[in-house]
Image 1 (tube, rainbow, N blue to C red):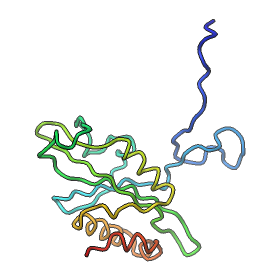
Image 2 (cartoon, rainbow, N blue to C red; image 1 turned 120 degrees about the horizontal axis):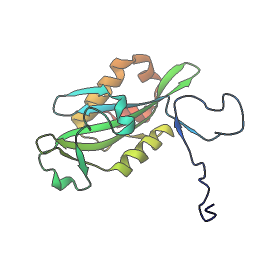
Image 3 (spheres, rainbow, N blue to C red; image 1 turned 30 degrees about the horizontal axis):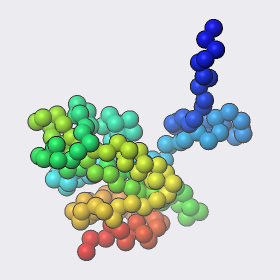
Image 4 (tube, rainbow, N blue to C red; image 1 turned 45 degrees about the horizontal axis):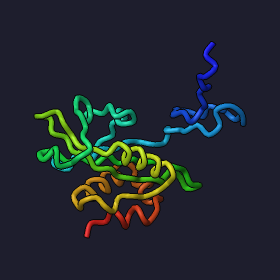
Length: 171
């Protein structure tokens, strides 16, 4: 009928489990988020928590908020960090393989916030590729995150790269 319409190409799919299940055909190269967890750092409350809703920008922190691209438009925003934590396994056991942090602020009174969506997507990708990007966080947030990761699983912390421990060290 309409010959001008292009056939949609298959880029990548975000999935939970291995779609190929051992096969080498269709679905190869699909992106698996099975070992990635979004950890929020509430800077003012001094706590960290996992909210899986962040995978689709539907976390408790993000719900009902219109995010703006300019941080100055939300001067009274409450500071948060969204940290993408990827877990991998060595012979000795699981460890924190990729840990990347993104800043965001939320002002519930005006239902506005600041975040850079491209940064959040890129940092999730970097975490999945086993990068450590946390050295730009403030000292209080670094301390909250390192305590959370240590308390979650001491053995995973011990098996993690020295770069993670060094970058989260508070001077």
